[in-house]
Image (cartoon, rainbow over all chains, first blue to last red; front, side):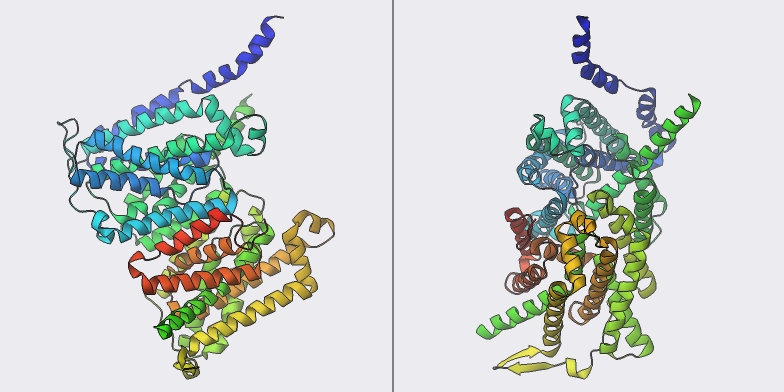
Length: 333
Length: 287
């Protein structure tokens, strides 16, 4: 009798411990991420772009998939990270790892500052404010051409070899290894975060933003926290892009980039950690394969894909697979 | 100096009136169903291309193409509403945004495929060209025509909403959709008609916009942002709010371009974010 209440109090912790356990499929996935080194050595530059996009999508997943904040301006933090890394490398110092940290911190500071606004609004006003802040930053970068190079892009970004030994070469070996390691570390952080009581509280807020504060969860404080963390991750992704390609163009802040990352995440599946990564792989590889197609027509297919996913696969590819797996297990049982 | 200032003010107001015609339909439909239709400007673009095609291909006079643009956009919106949008009225903001962004992407690519990516020229009839002198200042005839159109539309809309049975149903649905249904009002039917009318107005706006701001496939996107600003700032389902917000936006955009061109659209976005943070339901919004 005495153990029953203890077991009940223990249940949430056991639930979380069960969630946190590594599954064989996950281990296999991360091992497979090393395959491009052996199998596609000429596509490592693309692989590094995929890893960076996956990191960006993961950061959006934290706020959109777990906290339910719809953002049409997430590229703001990606662009801030990219410009911070690019401008600092041009004028101050060019050591990649410390640059990465500083750029992420700058994006995080901007995220923290805007999170106070974000936590106050929902629905249309929230969408418009995220859109507006994104456009504002894009216009600011466009106007401040003495600093950012404006529409011509930032010239003269030079990055020292990673750890003083590995140069960022044309083949992208260093770039991919570097991006993959950063992605993996950020993924571990995100994974730990969403399987914590904090992560559970976020999901609760997503499902019912009125009830969670009523049962004692500090709603707005949670939203501010996760928004800042997502901004840091987006900044990391942007800084990675600037360092591995040695270029920063105005495009990193564009609405197009915010929309693209949304498409990528939706395609893969929101609120599933791997959704953004899977989406990034599919999207970037497809865009590379169809790069001969006029970008105007490329967006026709993206549009069609969006309509089909929203209508038929509301939880993305991973959500569809999960449903298929569940019905298969039920059929077998 | 004063003359230039009045000129900027008038041009900005005329531009604002164009934005009003483009956005008023979205304001009402968004207020009724809470459906975030980002594809609104795609209907406007369709209206513009219908006008171009009828004038260049079939030699229709400009004024005759305007009703055609209205009807074409309204018809297209009915098809999309019945086929896609109505399934998502109860879906999340995100699903609505994504579906309609998908439609925008397809419409842009479709327009580029059919009409090409170049700016479409329009030849206005002689009586709309040139300018009219009033009290020593000269005003472009076309802009006066635009302002007259917008004011006529605003009066017709306010009268329609206030004094007709259908308008009363729409107002009831905006105020409290469940209560309106409970009273036996066919909210879905009323919404379908409103949606068609709103999109038709957008189509008309698209046709009127060509002579002022040009027309290319990016139209569906460029003006979407302005339209959303008008709707968000003006408040949902408020004709007066949309009118005031559109005028404010048009004048500040024109003044910004004239007096501080290096800032670009920065001022507009700052204005929008500031206004929304101050009053999230819009200047004249009640919710």
